[in-house]
Amino acid sequence: MHSTIVGRVFRYLGPIARPVQILHDAVAGAVYAAVPIGARLVGAGADLARGPGDGYPATTAVVNALWGDTLAGASSPLAVGPSIRGSDGRTVGSVAVGPNVVVLLHGLGQTESCWLRHGSESLGQRLDEEAGTTPLLVRYNTGLPVSRNGRAVSDLLEGLLSEHTDQIETVSLIGFSMGGLVARAALDSAPPAARWPTLLRHVVTIGSPHRGTPLAAIAPLASRALGIAATTRPLATMVERRSRGLKDMDGSHAGGETFEPAPGPGRPRHHYVAATITGDMTHPIGAVMGDLVVGVGSATGPAVTTDNVRVVGGVRHFDLLGSEAVVDQVVDWVRAT
Image (cartoon, rainbow, N blue to C red; front, top):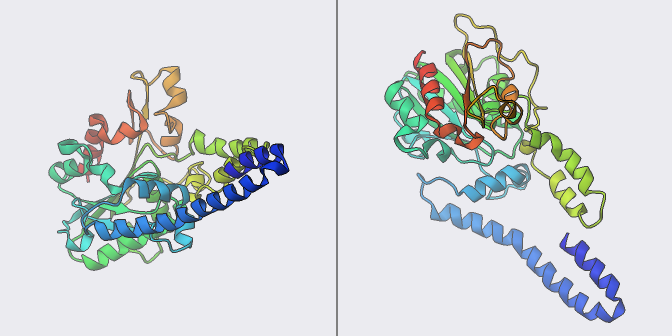
């Protein structure tokens, strides 16, 4: 866009501005060429600076949300790899794993630390103390396709069972926002011989866009609108080059509406948490806006019954994990294993 706007100015000024344009183009080209090199150096420096128990920077998580598939395809050091970690941030090999494991999957553009930001009220700590479970945190590249992340999580869980064959008796999956979609994709992509689905007791999705989000749905329209004018066409290109993970937030990745099997013995229970920004959950604004990111109908989309659906009022999307009502409900569901 910079080049488009400046190019118009120089064309307007004509040949008299040509020497200035040559100098400008040389400087701007050098600056833009240095950006990806600098990003690689920053990423490598961050990897060296942090210890094994540290979380990766929030900026890296955002960059992966926007272009994670491109970064992974280029084997960039900024691309996040999938892993399972304990509540202290260390890889699961150094964590004491109990018989009942709860795997927590963060949302788009987040890190695993999203589960630990609320002190004694954090969901991970409450599950550990009150439900007798071992919370494990998954780190993954949210810019990759949901289906690809689902396969990666399935492989991680199978590897976890291989390392702790005699210790683990039950597994539960809890996903926030995109994490709920990845949880569904993990179960859907698990090979027939996989053991972990046979131990699965609960799948809890919190504010997950099973039927997509309005922002993701309008992105293609925005791209076409921006592409009409030459000045805004570079912005249209940026929108089009958004990651596959972002595109999957429109709900197109999710299969049919019969994902959740009918409740029965030996089958995992599926639970859905949704929210409205209005305290009155029946208010028309809350019904339309949902939690400002995901509508109630989308967050509860695949539910077969209403028994395991909870809608909370007066909560915004990114405040869901800090909501006492949400944490209490999830703990009650998992404790009922």
